[in-house]
Amino acid sequence: MKILIIITLLFTSLFSGDVFDYKLTPKKVSENVWCFFGALEPPTKENGGAMVNSCYVKTKESFVVIDSGPSYQFALQAYTAMSKIAKLPVKMVIASHEHDDHWLGNNYYKEKFSSKLVGPENIDTAHKSVDETRMFKVIPKNAIKGTKIVKLDQHIKKSTTITVGEEVFEIIPIGEKAHSHEDTFIYLPKRKVLFAGDVVMNGRITSNRDGSVIGQLKAHKLIKSKDWNVLVAGHGYITDKTAMDESSQYFTLLNKRVSQALEDDIEASEITKLVKMKEFEDKAMYKELNARNVLDAYIELEFVEE
Image: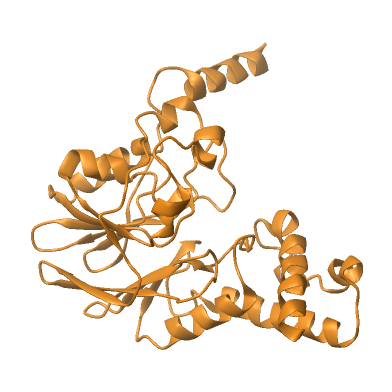
């Protein structure tokens, strides 16, 4: 009977008309920079899609948001939490790339503050206002409630510097497919803080379904060229100088091992049996994603070899 009551209460909280409670608490990662750190798992009904790192930068007269999160409700609750730190409007929202967990909170900021929405062009080309992205299909109705797909105000096609108040934001495209078809990272030179988007993850295996091993390695080289002390990954909790070590090692070894397998004439049907990336088997999402990453790397690198 107790189990039935618990299941009933959980079902009611997830699917009733009540607002989904994301239980958001900002964590300060640097002076004037706070982040909401997401779960190291896929979007689920239980987490409401909150598996992304969404950050606030406080400037003199406003906030700038880096990746607005998976829904209108998430963005609203994030702003409510940040209002307890400073009651400021959000002047600008920057999206790192087109995967929907990173930008579906945009319409809250547009409706509330007329915020300037900035990001890669393929957010607009890949998603129309009438579309239902992954989050609309996966997370509960009381979490996705109010969420709309809205157009960006500025597309980032080349390295761009934007100043908000006294804060300088360098928005830097990778220039080729890396984690997605168009990835950017955002660098604050004054604070030596870098927001890497999903070209860096830690604590979990990345999904490279839309990406490229070669592009990932280029992205890591670009990020290493910047002088940063704090790096916020798209997913993961490590923010110090070791924050990108896992991603860098993963793609370096993946490239090396799959390339060697191709030289040894290993067939595609055998590659996931040979290249297992066992150093990462204790990381979240390994079982779900690693084999697919290895096979995709084989197909990419085979084409490069030819």
